[in-house]
Image 1 (spheres, one colour):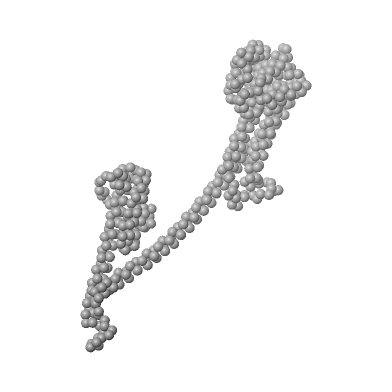
Image 2 (cartoon, helix red, strand yellow):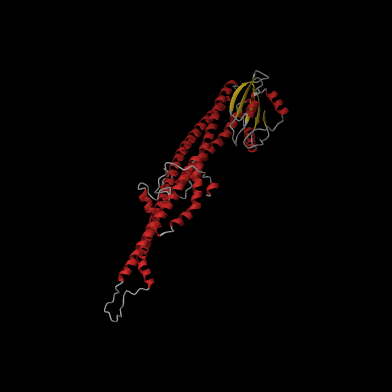
Length: 454
């Protein structure tokens, strides 16, 4: 007699049991099941064991607990009474469709169920192996479709996709999704391998149980177990190939991801180079405009005193002379004297004011360097950089306006480079910090944001 309990409630676990505690204890006493059967049901670990009944030492008991899976997960207990040639079995954890398949197969069996204790376990293994074989083939088909998707199909000469299409700039291929599929496929192969190992242990346990419970139809069951063993070898061979091929595909995907990242980095480098070229062109044009402005300013300063001298309304030239034939006044020297003096004064003032402005900018940059160094010592490099950026945003407009206050501001960067020849004015510290060394002695004062105003 075989007792098949109701379908399980959860998809991935046998528990909770579809019977009450009183019913389960009654079944256990009837079959003489050891307490390990209840532990086998509750645990999520596959196992196979055989022994003697707790109620009668002449009764042989077989307990099977399958892997945790969506399909064909069950807990089976078989008790065989050799004296009466009677088999009692209880089965937990089957789904509705699986119960129908088992019931139909038992009804079609030409051997009485009660006289053959190995029939139910062998039947369950046979039905489960069909599902495992189909699952293994589906995994291999999934791997083949991924190879077609990536162009790594290899041996298929009739396929239209060229080999190595990723190397042909197929950037639309999502390598991350493919890597996830391969990882999931590898995990599924590991699960099928675990099921195969469990079924092999079941076959070994059933053969030992069959040698103890020898009946007239045991030989036929042993032949069936041999077929199942060969089927498991084929499934294991297929799943091993799929797992190894999946692993190689994963490594290849990592290589493709690295190549794709290198291409993106090369594009970014090329874009940076173009930006640098454009910046250099803009700098050259700006320098050219600056030179033109300096020339215009110099010409203006040279001609300004001579033009200003005419404000005296001096008449050093007379193109309509009366009694005298001289066109030039004898006081022409006064014009040149005033012009020369004014020119010297204007150019000297320009040079002096340029020097004063340059010193002011240098002092401002030194104060900025002192603040940066003091912040780095007090708050650490990270906080110093953050506060320094805020200070630069707050003070860069004022400093820029000061630099533009005089015509000599066009020489600020060049003069800064001459002050410290070893530092390029376009360093990471910016043009304001380029040409100035940090002082050895730092003035001690409060540089907190509240007091300093930045």
